[in-house]
Amino acid sequence: MERILVTGATGRVGGNLVSLLVDAGYPVRAVVRDPARATLPAAVEVVRGDLSDPDSMARAVHGLDAVFLMWPGIAVEPRTVRAITAGVRQVVYLSTDVADLADGEPATGFHQEIERLIRDSGVRWTFLRPIDFAANLLAWSGQVRQGVVRWPYARAARSLIHERDIAEAAATVLTTAGHDGARYVLTGPEALTHAELAGIIGEVTGRPVRWEEQDPGQAYTQLAAAWGNPGFAAARLAAWKSFVETPERVTDTVPRLLGRPARTFRSWVQDHLGDFG
Image (cartoon, rainbow, N blue to C red; front, side, top):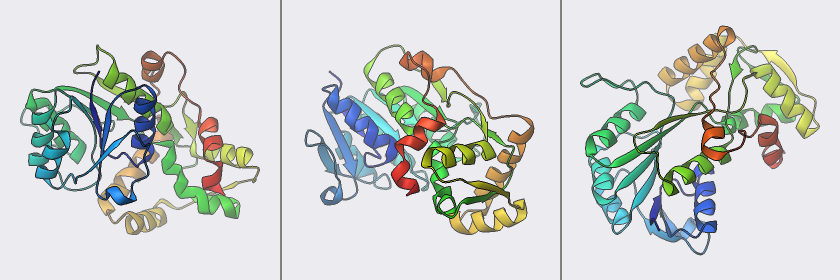
């Protein structure tokens, strides 16, 4: 039975993955920055580690078979990736919907950099590439409580995925054969416009939610300040604009991996009613 390390074990995807693996009887080790503050199942071995510290990650993977790797928005540390891949036989990396790089082609984001490092390591690997998390719409929670969502591009059609589906896909890839070298693009079951998503939140929460179109320039100013990354804010706005004419794609990856339809956005809202308070 595979012995598995989970990074991001206290997050939305990692936390669900830990529970799934423990319930299935797999030995799980979770790496966290502060073990004293981590709330995880009793069966989980919790160790201290930090992705910016290669030595700590080399210790964390010692004696294990596989790693679920989630890299936060910090600088890529090649020595950390090498320490992880040198210590295990399999890496499942939670990436995003990025293009494959040709040899020598410069990366346009950190996910591509990490994918390349993993590919070049010689370890068995699988990349999970979710289009976008439904949980990112928790950014609307304060506005939902006020009864209005002010956001740009009402007609941008999104195929958001429930974090539980990502976790179940990761568990499947980690514990079953036939996924080496796969690049799985994960989406929800349909593309819904921003305005439709806001309406569903209102229906499920029992709070009527009105859509108010926001000027993209104003949205850029607010998002660049909130995220601390003007380039990322500009990229997201450009993507949302493109989804008005060309909806975000929908894949059949979740049904193929899990043998059932992907969870709907409505079910995601039901699972997060407390977050919309």
